[in-house]
Image: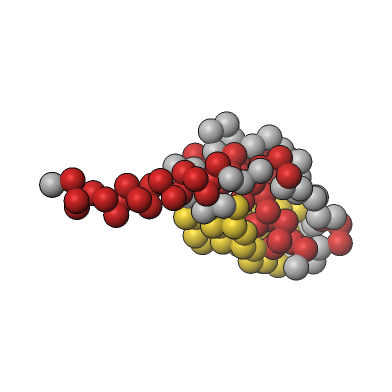
Length: 118
């Protein structure tokens, strides 16, 4: 009976170890200068430990008007998706991460940064 759960337990263990090895404080997020970004939709990707994010960021009149999640492989970090309206309201990436979802929050911030700077 237990043998059928071994692959799941192995993946869970590896994911937990991968997350615990990431130094989230060392991840630096920089604010793109929105005044220099043309109107359009930009795709950004990021990976923080096992968390992967792909999203589209729409800019209109030098303001972030929309962030659409394309992919969020997150483990237990789904609640980090709440950072999206916070970014839009602040018009900044200098926002607090979501408690309990630091890795996913940082992945979202990096993906937005990458979308607007690459």
